[in-house]
Length: 161
Length: 166
Image (tube, each protein chain N blue to C red):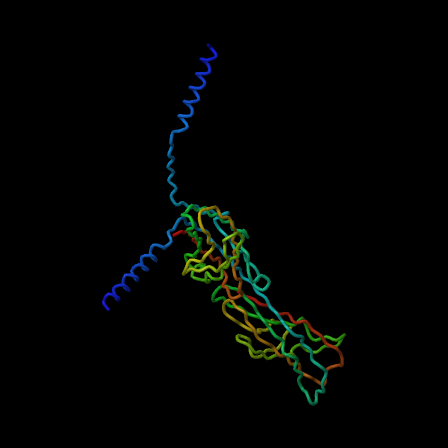
Protein backbone atom coordinates (compact mmCIF):
# COMPACT_ATOMS: atom_id res chain seq x y z
CA UNK A 1 0.00 0.00 0.00
CA UNK A 2 2.81 2.34 0.95
CA UNK A 3 4.67 1.40 -2.20
CA UNK A 4 1.64 2.31 -4.34
CA UNK A 5 1.39 5.70 -2.67
CA UNK A 6 5.04 6.45 -3.26
CA UNK A 7 4.73 5.44 -6.90
CA UNK A 8 1.75 7.70 -7.37
CA UNK A 9 3.61 10.59 -5.81
CA UNK A 10 6.54 10.11 -8.12
CA UNK A 11 4.34 9.99 -11.17
CA UNK A 12 2.52 13.12 -10.04
CA UNK A 13 5.80 14.95 -9.55
CA UNK A 14 6.96 13.97 -13.00
CA UNK A 15 3.77 15.30 -14.48
CA UNK A 16 4.28 18.59 -12.74
CA UNK A 17 7.81 18.86 -14.08
CA UNK A 18 6.66 18.11 -17.60
CA UNK A 19 4.04 20.83 -17.30
CA UNK A 20 6.68 23.27 -16.24
CA UNK A 21 8.80 22.49 -19.31
CA UNK A 22 5.95 23.41 -21.55
CA UNK A 23 6.15 27.02 -20.44
CA UNK A 24 7.22 29.55 -23.08
CA UNK A 25 9.88 32.07 -22.26
CA UNK A 26 10.55 34.93 -24.62
CA UNK A 27 13.92 36.59 -24.18
CA UNK A 28 14.16 40.04 -25.69
CA UNK A 29 17.68 41.33 -26.23
CA UNK A 30 18.19 44.73 -27.79
CA UNK A 31 21.60 44.93 -29.52
CA UNK A 32 22.17 48.42 -30.95
CA UNK A 33 25.15 49.10 -33.19
CA UNK A 34 28.16 49.68 -31.03
CA UNK A 35 31.84 50.21 -31.66
CA UNK A 36 35.04 50.69 -29.78
CA UNK A 37 38.39 51.80 -31.10
CA UNK A 38 41.56 51.42 -29.08
CA UNK A 39 45.27 51.89 -29.69
CA UNK A 40 48.42 50.63 -28.04
CA UNK A 41 49.69 54.19 -27.64
CA UNK A 42 48.36 57.74 -27.75
CA UNK A 43 51.32 59.16 -29.68
CA UNK A 44 53.98 58.26 -32.21
CA UNK A 45 57.32 60.03 -32.64
CA UNK A 46 59.72 60.14 -35.56
CA UNK A 47 63.22 60.68 -34.15
CA UNK A 48 65.85 62.75 -35.93
CA UNK A 49 67.94 60.82 -38.46
CA UNK A 50 70.42 61.43 -41.28
CA UNK A 51 68.35 61.79 -44.48
CA UNK A 52 71.06 60.14 -46.57
CA UNK A 53 71.31 56.96 -44.50
CA UNK A 54 67.68 56.96 -43.33
CA UNK A 55 65.40 58.42 -46.00
CA UNK A 56 62.38 56.89 -44.28
CA UNK A 57 62.23 57.21 -40.49
CA UNK A 58 60.19 54.58 -38.65
CA UNK A 59 57.99 55.78 -35.83
CA UNK A 60 58.58 55.04 -32.18
CA UNK A 61 56.94 52.78 -31.23
CA UNK A 62 57.25 50.94 -34.53
CA UNK A 63 53.94 49.14 -34.16
CA UNK A 64 50.76 51.07 -33.50
CA UNK A 65 48.43 48.24 -32.56
CA UNK A 66 44.80 48.95 -33.39
CA UNK A 67 41.85 47.12 -31.95
CA UNK A 68 38.53 47.59 -33.71
CA UNK A 69 35.36 46.24 -32.11
CA UNK A 70 32.18 46.75 -34.05
CA UNK A 71 28.68 45.40 -33.70
CA UNK A 72 26.75 46.23 -36.85
CA UNK A 73 24.04 44.82 -39.10
CA UNK A 74 24.84 41.57 -40.85
CA UNK A 75 26.86 42.20 -44.03
CA UNK A 76 27.27 45.89 -43.17
CA UNK A 77 30.63 47.34 -44.02
CA UNK A 78 32.82 48.75 -41.30
CA UNK A 79 35.55 51.19 -42.27
CA UNK A 80 38.39 52.72 -40.31
CA UNK A 81 39.92 55.92 -41.66
CA UNK A 82 42.56 58.37 -40.50
CA UNK A 83 42.92 62.04 -41.33
CA UNK A 84 45.38 64.62 -40.12
CA UNK A 85 43.79 67.77 -38.71
CA UNK A 86 46.52 69.79 -40.43
CA UNK A 87 49.93 69.53 -42.04
CA UNK A 88 52.94 68.94 -39.81
CA UNK A 89 53.71 72.22 -38.10
CA UNK A 90 56.65 73.61 -36.19
CA UNK A 91 55.75 77.18 -35.40
CA UNK A 92 55.23 78.85 -38.74
CA UNK A 93 57.15 76.15 -40.62
CA UNK A 94 55.01 73.57 -42.37
CA UNK A 95 55.72 70.16 -43.83
CA UNK A 96 53.03 68.33 -45.82
CA UNK A 97 51.12 65.60 -43.97
CA UNK A 98 51.70 63.38 -47.00
CA UNK A 99 55.29 62.88 -45.84
CA UNK A 100 53.83 60.33 -43.42
CA UNK A 101 52.96 56.95 -44.88
CA UNK A 102 52.14 53.62 -43.33
CA UNK A 103 52.21 49.89 -43.91
CA UNK A 104 50.05 47.45 -42.01
CA UNK A 105 49.72 43.95 -40.67
CA UNK A 106 46.39 42.30 -39.97
CA UNK A 107 43.45 41.11 -42.01
CA UNK A 108 41.44 43.90 -43.59
CA UNK A 109 43.98 46.61 -42.79
CA UNK A 110 45.51 48.57 -45.66
CA UNK A 111 48.55 50.80 -46.17
CA UNK A 112 48.32 54.42 -47.21
CA UNK A 113 49.50 58.01 -47.16
CA UNK A 114 48.35 60.57 -44.63
CA UNK A 115 46.31 63.53 -45.84
CA UNK A 116 44.91 66.62 -44.19
CA UNK A 117 42.27 67.13 -46.85
CA UNK A 118 40.55 63.73 -46.93
CA UNK A 119 40.23 60.69 -44.66
CA UNK A 120 42.41 57.80 -45.80
CA UNK A 121 41.36 54.19 -45.49
CA UNK A 122 43.10 52.15 -42.79
CA UNK A 123 40.83 49.09 -42.77
CA UNK A 124 37.61 47.68 -44.12
CA UNK A 125 35.60 44.72 -42.87
CA UNK A 126 32.15 43.19 -43.19
CA UNK A 127 29.84 42.54 -40.27
CA UNK A 128 30.40 42.48 -36.54
CA UNK A 129 33.58 41.36 -34.92
CA UNK A 130 36.88 42.18 -33.31
CA UNK A 131 39.75 43.08 -35.64
CA UNK A 132 43.28 43.61 -34.47
CA UNK A 133 46.12 44.87 -36.64
CA UNK A 134 49.09 47.20 -36.58
CA UNK A 135 50.15 50.31 -38.45
CA UNK A 136 53.82 51.04 -39.06
CA UNK A 137 54.19 54.75 -39.66
CA UNK A 138 57.12 56.23 -41.60
CA UNK A 139 58.23 59.80 -42.13
CA UNK A 140 59.94 60.85 -45.37
CA UNK A 141 63.22 62.38 -44.24
CA UNK A 142 64.75 65.01 -46.54
CA UNK A 143 67.66 67.40 -46.42
CA UNK A 144 65.31 70.16 -47.43
CA UNK A 145 63.25 69.91 -44.23
CA UNK A 146 63.85 72.98 -42.08
CA UNK A 147 64.95 72.23 -38.54
CA UNK A 148 62.08 71.94 -36.09
CA UNK A 149 59.84 69.74 -33.99
CA UNK A 150 56.77 69.13 -36.07
CA UNK A 151 53.46 67.82 -34.81
CA UNK A 152 50.02 66.88 -36.06
CA UNK A 153 46.91 65.22 -34.70
CA UNK A 154 45.65 62.14 -36.46
CA UNK A 155 41.92 61.51 -36.19
CA UNK A 156 40.76 57.93 -36.55
CA UNK A 157 37.13 57.34 -37.41
CA UNK A 158 35.25 54.06 -37.37
CA UNK A 159 32.11 54.14 -39.48
CA UNK A 160 29.39 51.90 -40.84
CA UNK A 161 26.35 52.54 -43.04
CA UNK B 1 5.48 61.41 -74.44
CA UNK B 2 4.68 63.18 -71.16
CA UNK B 3 4.19 59.85 -69.41
CA UNK B 4 7.62 58.65 -70.36
CA UNK B 5 9.23 61.78 -68.93
CA UNK B 6 7.51 61.28 -65.62
CA UNK B 7 8.88 57.73 -65.35
CA UNK B 8 12.39 59.03 -65.77
CA UNK B 9 11.78 61.50 -62.98
CA UNK B 10 10.71 58.79 -60.55
CA UNK B 11 13.73 56.63 -61.28
CA UNK B 12 16.06 59.49 -60.56
CA UNK B 13 14.41 60.19 -57.23
CA UNK B 14 14.77 56.54 -56.21
CA UNK B 15 18.50 56.56 -56.92
CA UNK B 16 18.98 59.66 -54.83
CA UNK B 17 17.16 58.08 -51.89
CA UNK B 18 19.26 54.92 -52.09
CA UNK B 19 22.44 56.93 -52.11
CA UNK B 20 21.52 58.95 -49.08
CA UNK B 21 20.54 55.85 -47.08
CA UNK B 22 23.98 54.32 -47.79
CA UNK B 23 25.85 57.17 -46.04
CA UNK B 24 28.23 56.04 -43.34
CA UNK B 25 27.52 56.83 -39.73
CA UNK B 26 30.37 57.53 -37.40
CA UNK B 27 30.64 54.84 -34.73
CA UNK B 28 33.78 55.86 -32.87
CA UNK B 29 36.69 58.29 -33.12
CA UNK B 30 40.09 58.44 -31.49
CA UNK B 31 43.06 60.81 -31.79
CA UNK B 32 46.76 60.00 -32.01
CA UNK B 33 49.47 62.62 -31.79
CA UNK B 34 52.36 62.45 -34.27
CA UNK B 35 55.66 64.25 -33.74
CA UNK B 36 58.60 64.45 -36.14
CA UNK B 37 61.95 65.69 -34.87
CA UNK B 38 64.11 67.37 -37.52
CA UNK B 39 67.50 68.41 -36.14
CA UNK B 40 70.32 70.40 -37.76
CA UNK B 41 72.63 68.24 -39.86
CA UNK B 42 75.23 68.61 -42.57
CA UNK B 43 77.07 66.40 -45.00
CA UNK B 44 79.78 67.08 -47.57
CA UNK B 45 80.32 64.66 -50.41
CA UNK B 46 83.36 65.07 -52.66
CA UNK B 47 83.52 62.87 -55.72
CA UNK B 48 86.70 62.61 -57.74
CA UNK B 49 90.42 62.99 -57.16
CA UNK B 50 92.58 66.08 -57.64
CA UNK B 51 95.61 65.11 -59.69
CA UNK B 52 97.92 67.34 -61.71
CA UNK B 53 99.84 65.37 -64.32
CA UNK B 54 103.36 66.48 -65.23
CA UNK B 55 103.47 68.83 -68.21
CA UNK B 56 105.97 71.15 -69.86
CA UNK B 57 105.74 74.58 -68.17
CA UNK B 58 106.68 76.26 -71.44
CA UNK B 59 103.55 75.13 -73.22
CA UNK B 60 101.34 74.77 -70.13
CA UNK B 61 101.88 77.50 -67.56
CA UNK B 62 98.95 76.07 -65.60
CA UNK B 63 97.62 72.52 -65.12
CA UNK B 64 93.93 71.76 -64.68
CA UNK B 65 92.74 68.82 -62.64
CA UNK B 66 89.55 66.96 -63.52
CA UNK B 67 86.47 68.63 -62.03
CA UNK B 68 85.68 67.68 -58.44
CA UNK B 69 81.96 67.16 -57.76
CA UNK B 70 80.89 68.82 -54.54
CA UNK B 71 77.66 68.28 -52.71
CA UNK B 72 76.92 70.27 -49.56
CA UNK B 73 73.83 69.01 -47.76
CA UNK B 74 72.54 71.18 -44.96
CA UNK B 75 69.47 70.87 -42.80
CA UNK B 76 69.12 74.14 -40.95
CA UNK B 77 66.44 76.57 -39.85
CA UNK B 78 64.59 78.56 -42.51
CA UNK B 79 66.67 81.60 -43.44
CA UNK B 80 69.82 80.35 -41.71
CA UNK B 81 73.05 80.93 -43.59
CA UNK B 82 75.20 77.98 -44.66
CA UNK B 83 78.81 78.31 -45.75
CA UNK B 84 81.33 75.90 -47.20
CA UNK B 85 85.03 76.62 -46.87
CA UNK B 86 88.27 74.87 -47.76
CA UNK B 87 91.67 75.15 -46.15
CA UNK B 88 94.98 73.47 -46.96
CA UNK B 89 96.97 71.70 -44.29
CA UNK B 90 100.12 73.46 -45.55
CA UNK B 91 102.10 73.83 -48.74
CA UNK B 92 102.49 71.05 -51.30
CA UNK B 93 105.26 68.84 -49.95
CA UNK B 94 107.58 66.34 -51.59
CA UNK B 95 110.23 65.30 -49.09
CA UNK B 96 111.98 68.54 -48.23
CA UNK B 97 110.71 70.35 -51.32
CA UNK B 98 107.62 72.52 -51.28
CA UNK B 99 105.29 74.31 -53.66
CA UNK B 100 103.50 77.34 -52.20
CA UNK B 101 99.83 76.51 -51.61
CA UNK B 102 98.91 79.93 -53.03
CA UNK B 103 99.82 78.50 -56.46
CA UNK B 104 96.65 76.42 -56.25
CA UNK B 105 93.41 78.07 -57.35
CA UNK B 106 90.02 76.95 -58.50
CA UNK B 107 86.94 77.84 -60.48
CA UNK B 108 83.48 76.66 -59.48
CA UNK B 109 80.11 75.99 -61.03
CA UNK B 110 76.78 75.62 -59.31
CA UNK B 111 74.24 77.82 -57.54
CA UNK B 112 75.74 79.52 -54.52
CA UNK B 113 79.32 78.44 -55.31
CA UNK B 114 81.96 81.19 -55.54
CA UNK B 115 83.16 81.52 -59.12
CA UNK B 116 86.85 81.47 -58.21
CA UNK B 117 89.14 81.08 -55.23
CA UNK B 118 92.77 80.76 -54.16
CA UNK B 119 93.94 78.17 -51.65
CA UNK B 120 95.42 79.14 -48.31
CA UNK B 121 96.80 77.23 -45.37
CA UNK B 122 96.45 80.23 -43.09
CA UNK B 123 92.74 80.90 -43.37
CA UNK B 124 89.71 78.99 -44.62
CA UNK B 125 88.64 80.14 -48.07
CA UNK B 126 84.98 80.43 -49.04
CA UNK B 127 83.71 77.89 -51.55
CA UNK B 128 79.99 78.57 -51.37
CA UNK B 129 77.25 80.28 -49.41
CA UNK B 130 73.57 79.45 -49.19
CA UNK B 131 70.47 80.25 -47.17
CA UNK B 132 68.18 77.67 -45.56
CA UNK B 133 68.10 73.91 -45.79
CA UNK B 134 68.79 71.99 -48.97
CA UNK B 135 71.15 70.07 -51.21
CA UNK B 136 73.72 72.36 -52.81
CA UNK B 137 75.37 70.70 -55.77
CA UNK B 138 78.31 72.06 -57.72
CA UNK B 139 81.80 71.40 -58.97
CA UNK B 140 85.31 72.75 -58.52
CA UNK B 141 88.07 72.65 -61.06
CA UNK B 142 91.48 73.11 -59.46
CA UNK B 143 94.35 74.75 -61.32
CA UNK B 144 98.02 74.59 -60.34
CA UNK B 145 100.53 77.14 -61.48
CA UNK B 146 103.16 75.16 -63.42
CA UNK B 147 106.42 76.90 -62.56
CA UNK B 148 109.93 76.14 -63.89
CA UNK B 149 111.17 76.73 -60.35
CA UNK B 150 109.54 73.56 -58.96
CA UNK B 151 111.90 70.77 -57.96
CA UNK B 152 110.94 67.41 -59.50
CA UNK B 153 108.88 65.27 -57.14
CA UNK B 154 105.46 63.93 -56.20
CA UNK B 155 103.82 66.64 -54.14
CA UNK B 156 100.78 66.26 -51.97
CA UNK B 157 98.67 68.30 -49.59
CA UNK B 158 95.48 67.74 -47.60
CA UNK B 159 92.50 70.01 -48.20
CA UNK B 160 89.86 70.26 -45.47
CA UNK B 161 86.32 71.24 -46.36
CA UNK B 162 84.07 72.60 -43.63
CA UNK B 163 80.33 73.20 -43.76
CA UNK B 164 79.01 75.59 -41.12
CA UNK B 165 75.84 77.35 -40.08
CA UNK B 166 75.33 79.73 -37.16
